[in-house]
Length: 175
Image (cartoon, rainbow, N blue to C red; front, side):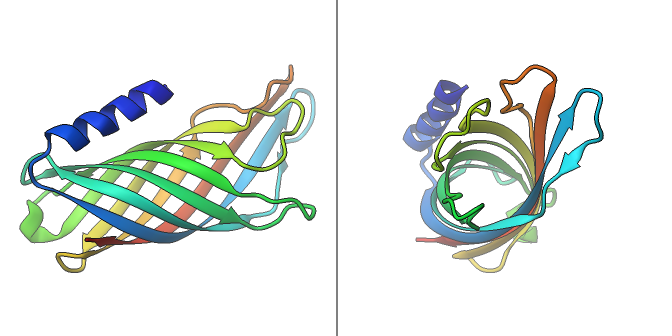
């Protein structure tokens, strides 16, 4: 899956004549739930993260843009341990009324890598899917609000599954 995401990002980079690089800042808050066979689900407290990142906005048509990105998330400490993440994402911005309407819907996929100390029984990476709504405030600034959910289970333990959901917002600046 990592190779697929990187390949799509590379192809969009190489073959797009009308594209822009940019930087983003954002904040997200999410919860993690553990399901244990024979017990009630356990939901952790919400935790948040600030993120900074880079993206490449490749215009595919008047209605579609492809947005590969990479971001570094600075998460709240958990039990005095670092909770940072490195994320690679790929979004498809769909403008229902064309770019002149400034409004878009953005489904996307992402792959996150925890930079925290490894925990036995948990994978340090997670695959996620998201849906967002955005608006181009100007030629350079874009605002996006999104919801994401995990598509993979990072638990390696028999009888335990882990999932997470989050809401976030990001401000993008195109160079």
